[in-house]
Image (cartoon, rainbow, N blue to C red):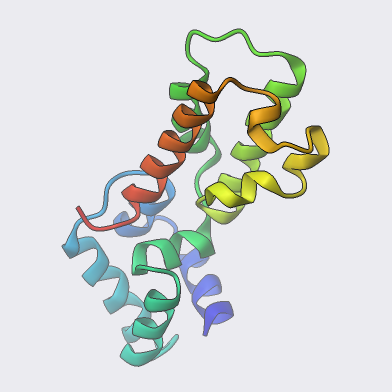
Length: 153
């Protein structure tokens, strides 16, 4: 089901609800209903397949985002909130770029992911090895905001 849904959604990236997922725009309950309708009516899966996928992903918006990723410009825009007003070192900038890469590919970055490869290739301590505690908290807040846009408002 996941592979069929990915292929279908990638063919329909211009659909408004899919665009909202990719562009990090907040989803409404109507958007989620439309995404479900699209997946069921296309024959990709039935309502139970969609329900199970949404449950495993902690929401249909998160499931869809995991399949289509986040638009690179939207990922950079989200991280711009974190980098604004800061002069980053080369390692800090590389860390932020890794976060952008993961958002582009996976749609969200769970906080625990920052403490594993490839992030720990830069520093074994994760973000705390590169940033002050307040900066790490701000980064986590930004990642939480990105995640929240894939949930119905």
